[in-house]
Length: 189
Image 1 (cartoon, helix red, strand yellow):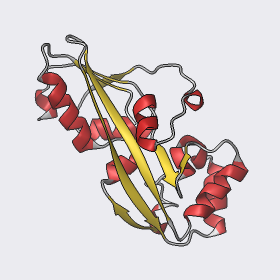
Image 2 (cartoon, helix red, strand yellow; image 1 turned 180 degrees about the vertical axis):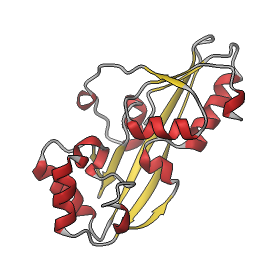
Image 3 (cartoon, one colour; image 1 turned 45 degrees about the horizontal axis):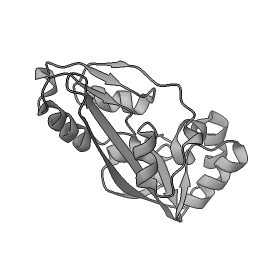
Image 4 (spheres, rainbow, N blue to C red; image 1 turned 135 degrees about the horizontal axis):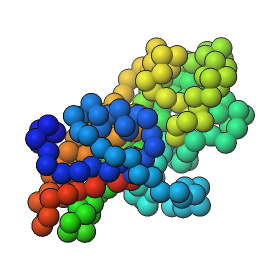
């Protein structure tokens, strides 16, 4: 679907700068409208179920444990040191609601990130900048301090960064097939 030809309004249910950037890269104009919810109060065992329930937060899975945004410097350091020389999975979801018909289409995607050893000085710099507290799992893939230590990404990089372009396009298309023509891209992760 060509974004420039869209005749519908998109409302992004997320304040994530990465999601805003990705949606803009896709060529869409959008309005931001976020819900004031306590994401930590919503719990699920499986990461796929959690991101679908939250539909507003990306989560990172490390050795079977779901990691959201770290709460403090010690937790941030623990997260990043754990990835050093290892890998983590990122699971994100997208929910598109057609406001005319009320029909919702949602899905999730995952990707794996493999890391080289990350030096303590880099970890300290990331924490000093406050980067880990802005993203699920505490590590922003596209950050200039992080990127040199990424060995490989298995899956879509945009999924790791917060919004799968292919999944978003697919769900918008599906929502448009419903009666009505004004889908709301909400609660992306």
